Length: 422
Image (cartoon, rainbow, N blue to C red):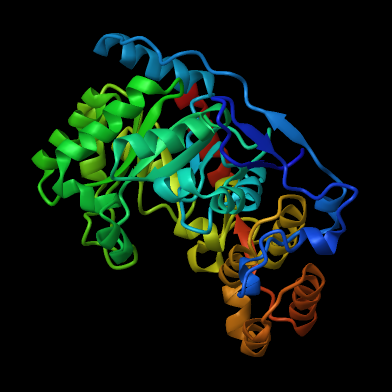
């Protein structure tokens, strides 16, 4: 399917969504430097597959902003929309520089029902063509899709949201980023200190978009504050709330367990769909989380970076169970890297994203062969040929780390998910 990228913002309300794949008149070498920067990792990784395809798509003209509706009707519409999407339960979480199109497509290949884009900066997105071109890509098969923005200005957020509205199923507002850059930029979880602004961001989108608005949040230290926060978002027009069960200060997911009880309390308090985020390492965690919280789906982030096949029931050696019936599944992370690289050739992204995913997926292998990792780090400019050769060298060196799959667990989890969708 042709790659789609946002082209320059046009004066007409309709936005041209043009593939940046090179045309036959453009050589692959020239196409590879559409985003030439001082750092080669900022260049697009254009391969021969992308060089063979070009497409241009015009966004459908959208009608005027939707008329106001009652709270009851808004809740009904929220559920109707969720069901039209198939009630997705296994969702790729938003990850800066890591939940880009090729990675989303890889996760979808291995069981993901829906996915978020990386967090996009609403002001830069609305103002800068290059940022739009480099940071947001999608394709027909990339659905259901949440496009996530960080923001602290309702009008700027709306301008950015309208540009992606025809190509997604939710416009999501990031209220969960706990990093220092979010503190400096006054967005993400640091807007928890300014709830009137949070409310205005949600209200402005809800009143002016034709796609639903979703919000991704963290919890407050006090449960009553979390519940008041979540209810305010629903009342402001949020059609879905994803709850990361950690506070703003609990940044280390390995040190702090997510609070599933708090997520359950939010689910019980709200009338719109609620997603749970935190403590998802394998499919048994998915089953346990859904049962404990009653949530309508789960998000996974860090575990997927190491193991994009998580939602298909594969688990890394770290989470392999004693007595695993089938043991080695025949699939390993090097195989997943090869699949990912082929998707990157089809859907080009900046090399920095490719480099990051290769490091995360091959972490176990690099611990056995650190010299290969050092070779990767020493490569100032990556190519697909070099990366494919590197993976082949790792395989030849031995020390393969397989992924494991327990069929009985997969079957019981699948049956449970199917029953939940019935």
